[in-house]
Image 1 (cartoon, rainbow, N blue to C red):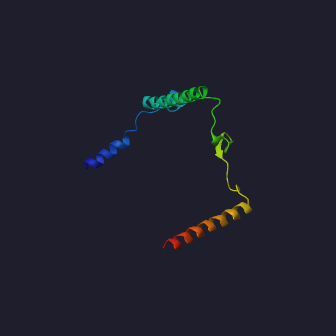
Image 2 (image 1 turned 90 degrees about the vertical axis):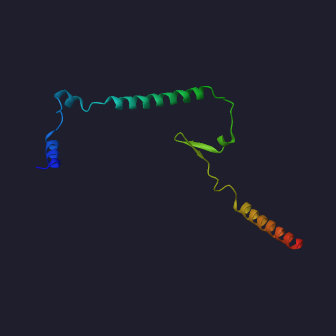
Image 3 (image 1 turned 90 degrees about the horizontal axis):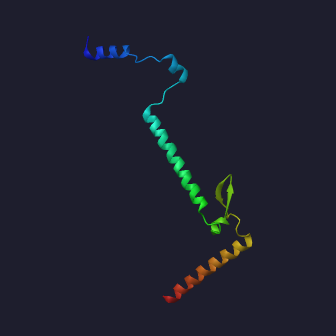
Length: 114
């Protein structure tokens, strides 16, 4: 029998430790490194919340930004107001004619300079 075949046969035979009755009741046990990772993540989140609470407590109640007017909250999330219908049709037509008039005026000025 070859060496690799004998290794394969012995590997199939070793099943590891069987679970005890107590482990079956409790479920999977947490390894120490998993506990450490979970504890670090917990403390990191706790520290972030503490910093946010501290920042909220020390803020200036008279503080104002114009963005506060132009936004609203939906479910606690800030959403900027849409500016889709900011101008009426008449205002849009006026702006377009002013734009074309400006372009024509500049073009006429360039022709005169030549």
